[in-house]
Amino acid sequence: MGVWIGRGRKARSCYGFDDISLVPGDITLNPAEVDVSTKIAGFELKMPILAAAMDGVVDPGFAGEFGKLGGIAVLNLMGVYTRYENPYEVIGNIISSPVEKATSLIQEIYKEPVKEELIAHRVAECKKNNIICAVSSIPQWALKYGNIAQEAGADIFIVQSTVTTAKHISKSYNPLDIKSFCSVLKIPVIVGNCVTYKVAYELLETGISGLLVGIGPGAACTSREVLGIGIPQVTATVDCAAARDLYYKKTGRYIPIITDGGMITSGDICKAFACGADAVMVGSAFVRAKEAPGKGYHWGMSTSDENLPRGTRVYLGTSGALKEILYGPAKTDDGTQNLVGAIKLSMASLGTATLREMQLIDIAIAPAIKTEGKVYQIAKKNLSNKK
Image (cartoon, rainbow, N blue to C red; front, side):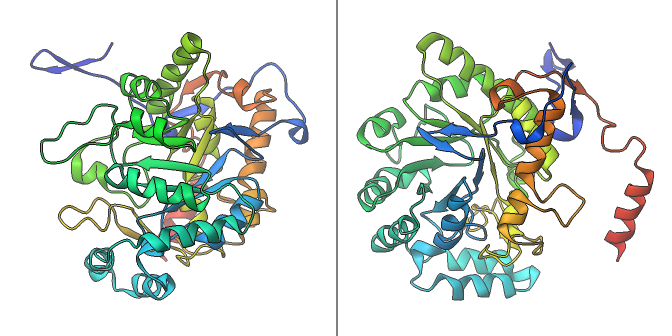
């Protein structure tokens, strides 16, 4: 299937969250009685949401608050918290920088080497809160930092890069052998990011305990603009979920997939579950929390690349406490607060009692879903943007 684009080649039609709508079923349920819990890397979560490993989102304090509310916040082991004894002074410089100087300043700040003793110290700070401690690094440093984090008490290690495959070729350095890494590390390993069926299946075969799905959809990520790569999140999630389902059928081992990025509202999050996700990883929604270290500022993990930045600094503002964003009561009408409540109401309206049931509901291709009959809302938004 596909559309001929010339030279004997076809291009496939792919879909993002704005292109689809969820179709209600034959029954409805009481929202208070649906189950939004999920299981990630062997851990039971009260809610199916992870906070992204962004320096403006997650520090040890935020990780503690997020964990107590039932989710997992991932700490970036290659961020300012492991490079500086006093990271908040550095964050203050980032958020106060003029727009035109922000990228160059971030590049300079992240030249400071990661300090191994700070890795252990930050993990210990997270563990003091009696939460599930998840940390991340890029593949090149995963083996070294993974051992340090494990010894310090981390519960989950995430290997994350712009594009991850089970096979990586290099003549100048030894690539990370994901299968070997999973067997050596005693704690569960989650890997990302990917967007295609074949790569997802090959990664599942390496022994990972979770898979991150998404290339370039994040609010502070510019990979799609800089590199021209990526697949819209609806198609990416459906394809990777299909790989998960086949792998489970063949092996009896169910490995959760986590849709990572591209979700602006609670409605987008609900659509991710309908496409097959077991959990979602979100950054921009939590930058707006009072507890977020970025004070409303958000910058991509690859903004600091010395040669080719693939991220930017954006300002989203602060809208409320983390608990309000997750559980309400919502003080905004745009789907950015009470995310868990919205998931429950969506599930109940669809007649699904669990997330696994929600993965099987009907989906409609509906590009007008956000504009049909919304002329006054659109006008209101345009007026607000002009102000």
